[in-house]
Image (cartoon, helix red, strand yellow):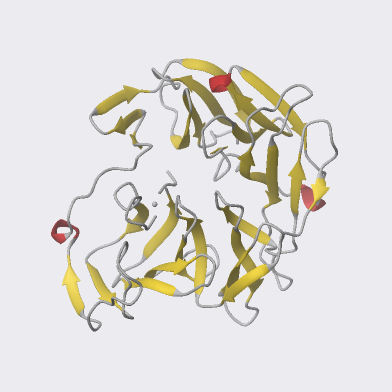
Length: 327
């Protein structure tokens, strides 16, 4: 499962990082740290290395939207069994305002499922997805009114907990490379007053050319519009419209450069030291890992100022760790 985290005094507690960690973690603060909620001029002490086991770390609160243990959703004291087929492996989920969207891993035939579930976990609707179409591609708007994913060669936008679904045409792509939904915004995707907008991108094969800027804006009743939001390979979109992602593949190695652009597509800053992963809920920070494309072998977890790229926190681990998402 992909998942989760932010950094302000108000959003610190529900901000959790989902990472794959192997072995003992040695944490080092590699630069003075601005503590969340503190005055900008207050800094932490000098860098210090020390071996920590996971048992040494304090137990924080769980993610605000919950997390999955098999087919059971755990959110605070709540335990909710999701109505997915027996033996199906849940890959990810997003919370809607009155239910959930759940994506499964592909079966032996290369097909996955997306389930719309009611607030009590009961099934509302189901869609078949193609191989790799679900991975990273089940998304919800900030307020949970809309959810979106790829199924049947269309972008599907759901509302009313999955009871209403709107299909949007997606562009044909070279070599048939799969598409994924990055984000969905708006409050309604039906009728004359539809205001939903879907940002779609194509997964790229890594080559000498790097990301090619294959991103589109989808709206009801309109043709897909190619867009260059300043970031060729968009990885995350903040609530305030900032976008983050890969800008360049380093040809003589397996690293990459990344950046953040404003809502009009102007690049605010770039870095070749970090791979940008996800924005904090308040849009003020961006989580990053090391710049290896795809995240293999990460040894750092970094928090950067979203508008300036200023480093706020950098932790180094002794073993491999994969940083996937922040909620």
